[in-house]
Length: 189
Image (cartoon, rainbow, N blue to C red; front, side, top):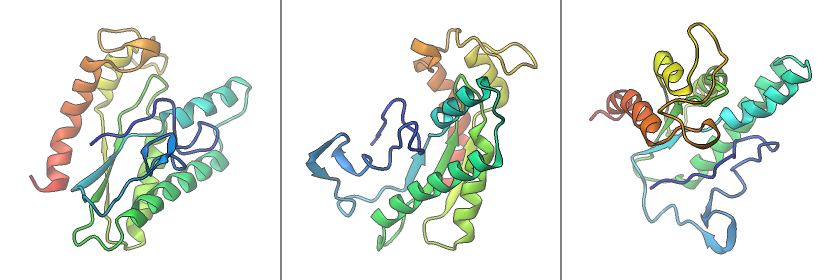
């Protein structure tokens, strides 16, 4: 099962996915909420964060620095999303695992540190849903995004990009190939 809403993140300014992620049809609240007791997955794989960083890029362009305040807010909102997901599977005989994927985007791997921090904080709480972190290989991120060696400036134009510099099926295949061995280890497959 896959749920994705292009352009969403965890922070209100992206906008945040939390208000819509529990609905069966996303934006259609009249369709009702998903029954999380009807099926419990082995893992909840989360690939989110770059769009939150895009909003920060606008601030950078206005000569504002990435601040500890932004990082703290991102982590707080990310943790709120995890708490919401955890509540949905409360009481599951075998709770799913959280698997965080830092797959990057044209704007980089900036959210990776904050996602790792959120994952560690989650585990420190000792809840039944355990949290694990995975990431794309840096050289593959560079290749997908058309980055020049040693630069964070990327064209977003390669055989691995589609519209607006997003990963196309070839780019996603590279990301999946990097993540799959990590996922197998986490899941014990």
